[in-house]
Length: 387
Image (cartoon, rainbow, N blue to C red; front, side, top):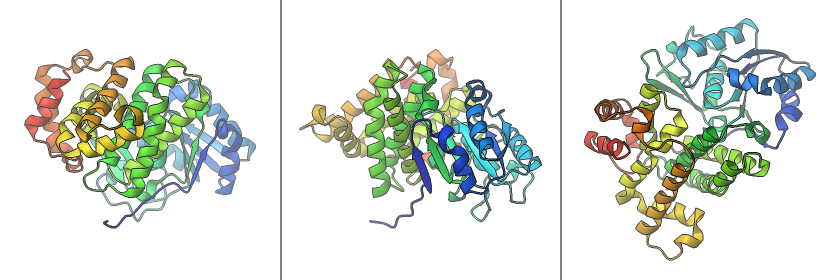
């Protein structure tokens, strides 16, 4: 076994209503005096910001809110959030919401360092930077951003840039399932399938697969798999929501320490060029990529199949178990209510060559971690199969 370096949050709380009950006291432990809540307008409208703000203020902490985060946060939005934090002398950063809000908060937490714009640190080594205390409170069970040390920002040229360093790992992750109860069905489905992809790609990583990530990926996938249909059928099932949220966090810890791969490589151009939400984009391409990988990864997919479908896969050879596993993921997608053909999302055959070219030339790092290499023609074929 090769050497392992593994990182995870210092403090994870998984408890219903924990944001209201514990946020202020946790902030006091970090001697915070002024906190910025980084979120989006939808989270404010749901009343969640009010709950967080009250908890902090009751603990004697001043609060400023930045709720202008948008999906795939661009550099300018992140810069605006940093300016507000700087102007209010914030000494605690709280990311509240989905992956975009938490990713934005991660960069805001780098405020003490000498740079004017996020542009100045894209593609740079920030491992020596200082960081403000950072809390992450997810409102979706999917991205795992609360437990990862990567922030994905949209650069001025439209490409996705990742700032990747343990320096931006949240100090505290608060998993409060009550914050996911109001999620619409389509967001619940897309984020859950995103988290399942994280588990699968972590477990099958060609470059950084390791026993710790493997264990977390398997447990996370079991929690997500066993509760996926429950939360779609009954969105107010708090126990199922809590399982999904913790499963997503385990998936995040797993993949950030092992890597994601070609599913993400093929999904990014769909999000950038056609504004398909990240989780939905991953769900669209996952089965095509996993099927392509079968010649190399069938034994690993079979192990996951046995973990989540022990009765159905008992006695099966690896290829059959792996195929059943992929078929069930496809069924999850098709029964979720999400659109699952590219043509349903206004993508045409003429768009595919450009999408494939982006995958090969911009996201080669994600092909390098995939169990099997991909050529331009093979990427094109995967896209065409789901057209």
